Image 1 (cartoon, rainbow, N blue to C red):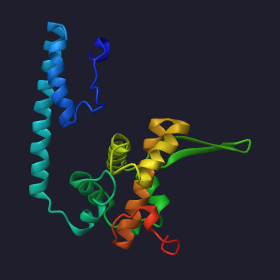
Image 2: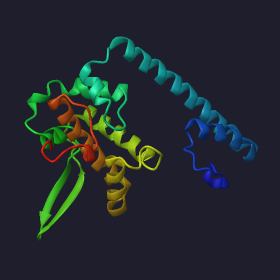
Image 3: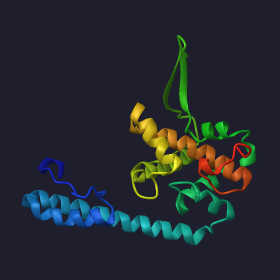
Length: 207
């Protein structure tokens, strides 16, 4: 609806951020009456769904106490309480995975690979995987994609990875690359029982 009438936040704010939402409420007055009414109804539905999501998240917090491993997982870029809970519960015991790539494959963040004529092609992510882990890591990667250009994020490895891959292969592949990095990082976090660190903070000996 906004695109049809060439309306967008002048400061580049995300529409559903606090600032963007304030702009969106004010933009209703610039739309034709019937269009504004429809958009207002959509926003009311969105607000109702947000209340339901908040209530559900509060119930999850009441039922599940954050464990030390969940706290470590929260050091991953883009991972908050809910994603940390999902990842921790779905991983179970990390020692059942021999390596980070195998955990990434189990999590569905490893793309299909085909080679022909000396060329290697990377396809879509594997469907045969733990769908809850796949969802969690992709959600975290989407957070990175949404914030990569913001202050405090531009210097981070995940942001640079997203920008580099997006320039070559597009946003969807870049999100997949970030999700795979996060999955492999989660493996090492749980294996070493250490928080996530930027690559610049890891010495060659530590790996």
